[in-house]
Length: 167
Image 1 (tube, rainbow, N blue to C red):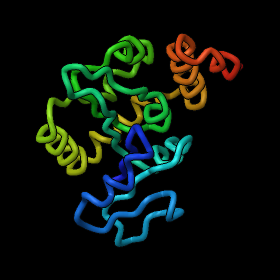
Image 2 (cartoon, rainbow, N blue to C red):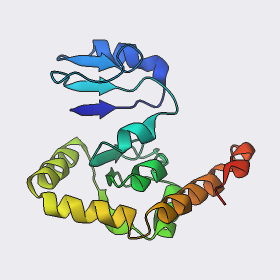
Image 3 (cartoon, one colour):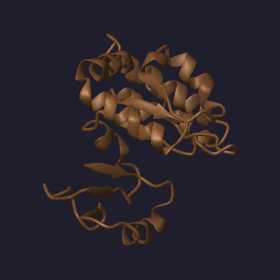
Image 4 (cartoon, one colour):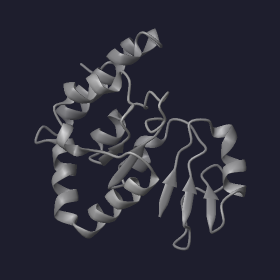
């Protein structure tokens, strides 16, 4: 199952129409069916639900030269192995602050994404080690740390985020 979460939910229906295969939209189906090939998350605020059930997450807007990446904190906090391109902007500093760079795999294009996913699926021990690195032995403490880092990076854009920092 491939789960897509486009940045702009208003684009999801046209994305779904452009894909051949069994595609379902989250807004029209609570969950994918066993026959679903691609499940498109066209709702907001639910990514952690999906990351919790995924082993691998590609964080977008990082392959293009002008890309600046997207926030990976939720995926890392849920133990996903994270694939990302070379252009992550300010999130590179955030990656270093988490102390879990070994959970990241740098990819350059769609071919290297496919190769990395194939390698991880064929070597579950490697994927499991990266997942454990993302979570660390700190459990919920790591999640709080990632949330704080995420919010600290976001407070310049969304000042209200600061009030949501866990104690």
